[in-house]
Image (cartoon, rainbow, N blue to C red; front, side, top):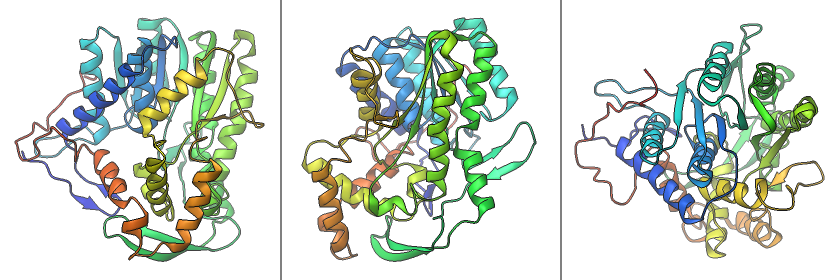
Length: 396
């Protein structure tokens, strides 16, 4: 079938298998071009199919020669209907890993559930013995608590006051004002339940209790802070409250791993185009301005560039892991440079539907968004018939 992008709001309903494979290959080639990193050799990636999680799996495998187990929750294809992009990404990754002689297996299911945790632990025990790195990169909007059976939904809202500011419809380029009513206490609590650190801690507790964490094992979760212009809806909103919980959880996990010399870190990453960030008002406009500035300065990074730098220059560099005064790894350092943020703030004031094409990089935003689903990659014939029925080799 010929596969074209079909949009519904900030979601693309189709994905291109050949484009997703091209994306994975591009990321692998980038990692290989940067040389080897003396990193972890047995890695579990929770949330391994897209974005930072996929980049972490690729960097571990092709930068350090690691055996990887990836956990994700993706939609397989059916006749005439494409899979979700993460499914195609994972199929391509496993194929490339196998060709390179690297161990790679995947689990498709709800990472919040006890059943999937047990499945992952059984696989580690049977195939790897132990893991020395656990990446936690889930980005689900909902979570069922395995202890209570209650389904919790996250919300994207400010706390305390109604938030009003500019945003852009990245499909049309229209810059408008958006107002978001503040969250109530239940919405805040639910967002923390979904996006905070509780499940991360449950994973690490289960792995440790089963003896599956190697001596000195490390675990990393990903967070974001961002600038003043986005903080009301992000860092000081419901998501920010969840990220505060995630970051606090790193300290409690580190305490629990003291007897094996383990450590938990949160890496604060750069703003990037993701399915999640596209849904947050204000963020698309901020990213389009940020991209323009960082590209002009030659310091723009996508997911793979961020994570490769995180591994090479932070996690496995000589001299220890540098952190800020709250114990976080700051790989958002280039985004948050004063010269970058001062220019973003100045351009923000000038942003209108008419000016944005000149002062921002909305075209880059749209291209990155379509790339998430396997579209707009050079070298892919999008007019040719594509086989939507691609399988992930390790998944029955």
